[in-house]
Length: 317
Image (cartoon, rainbow, N blue to C red; front, side, top):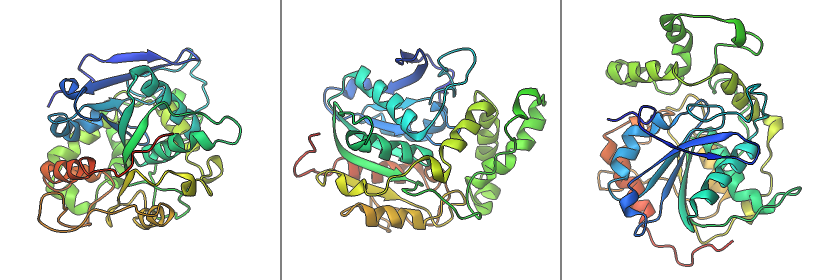
C-alpha cells in the first residue's frame, strides 16, 4: 500500500485562506463512473482510507481529503485559531467539490464525517445561509455515525489531552503512542486487536503523525450536543437518492442504535444484508473502524453493489 500522506497531493485554497489537501484516485474512470467521496471522522487523515480506496478506485474515481488543520490541510493563518464546526467543515467540503466541478457524486461519511455529510446535504435548508449544492447525489453511505449527538457516557473517543495542555506537552514517540493507545483501541474490539496486532500497530503509529492535538480538540468540541442540531431536516431530503446505513454492534465509539435512528429519520434507508453472497456482510458484529473487519473484498462488493444500484429519478437540487 502506498501511503496517501507520502504521495503527492493537490490543494485548494478556501475563501478565508486555509487550504485543503486531497487526492483523487481512479481518475481514468472520471468520464464513465460517478466519483465516490470518502469523508473521514474525528482526527482522520487521507491515509486512513488506504485499504478501502485501493480496491474501490479500480472501478471508480475516489476522493480522499484532510479536514482543515489536519494532515496536510492548513488553517487560514499561523495563529491556527479558526473556529471549527460541523457546518464549517461541511462548507469546506462544498468548496472542494465545487472546485472539482463534478456534476454528480456519491458520498460516504464516517463517524464525524457522517455528521458533516448530513450537514452538507442540509445546506440548501440552512436558516441563516441557505446554500445551493451544484451537484446531484445519487447514493449516500452513512457509516458508524449519528444524526443526534451521543449522550451515552459508555461510548465515544477518550482523547488523552485537555485544552491548555497540548501546547506545552513534549512527549517522545513511544509516550505519544501510549497516550493515544486507548483512543485507537476504542475504534476496534478486544478480539480484533488480539487477532490483528500488526494492523493495530499500523493504526497506532499513524495516529501520532500529522494529527495535531489542537485540531482534534476543536473537532471534538464541534461534536458537542449543543453545537449542531439536525431536528426536522431529514424529512426535507430528496427521496430519490439511495441511502445505506452501516452500524456495527461492536462499535465502542458510536452506539449501533444510532444507525437505527438514522434509518427511521430517512424513509427508505437500508442496512447491509447479512449473508455470504457478494454485496452482503457476514455479520453485523464489527467495530467503529468498520472496513478493517472481514476481507476488504466484502466491503468492496457491498459498496459497489450499492453504488451501482439504479436510482429511479436522480435528485436535482
